[in-house]
Length: 306
Image (cartoon, rainbow, N blue to C red; front, side, top):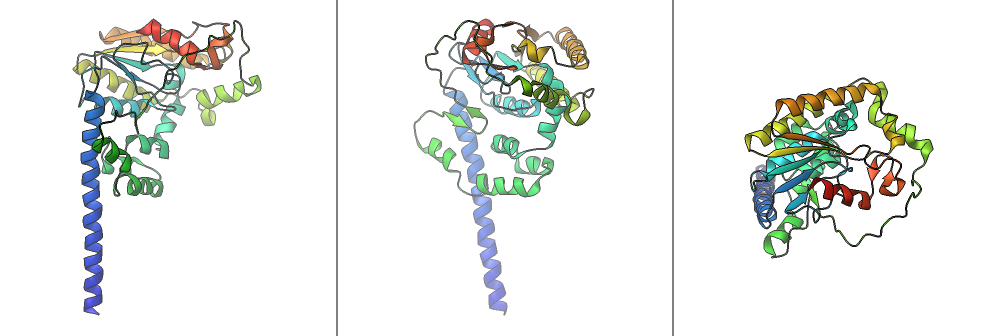
């Protein structure tokens, strides 16, 4: 019986050694690959945002990387920037800043701590930090077991090869091929019957139509403060919105947005605001849906803010 127990103890000890070993190996790989990614190019500008920013062109803006990903809330953008500043010193941060970014639903996306958020942050934030904040412990643990406590093949491949780091959990390379110019006054490719549903999901989530995203706004200010400490200019950009969407945004959020904009630009000398919300009014050909420009529209805006 004692021998049997001893075998189990030794087995568990070996498993623990392997788990801890892979955890530290992966953290070592994360650091080396992140260093390779950020130092292999000259970076003057970092783009941080959500799906509204994903098509902004890195090529149209000199020495720029676009780290925008769909549904990114401000806390995730903050952690991305924090990691980037460990390896590079940009001069400018171009930051998504629209009405929905300060609404309560933006907090929900982060507070629910979805699998998407954990998958983007596991190579940046510590295991304890992410796990303690996650409300879905089983999902979090399964991700960590796959990403942290077993060999991370994607990072290992980048570490061992000379190839350029094209994709990371917090960065997706956006290929920019030739674009076909859209037809003038094209039709908006969106079901108008779903417009109300879309607006409600952004501004009236579970009847929260007069509730701000307190967590999101606090992290927006943290991003600005971090940039201020590092002598980095922050360009807040409100991307074009189709009038059919813009006209349905509740006045509460418009008023709060305008007040916050005035406060941020007045109190922080490193902050400038670019409002393109009505830039493509009645120009359907530049939209993929009422609150997202297509690749052609994004290219035009990229050239405007470079």
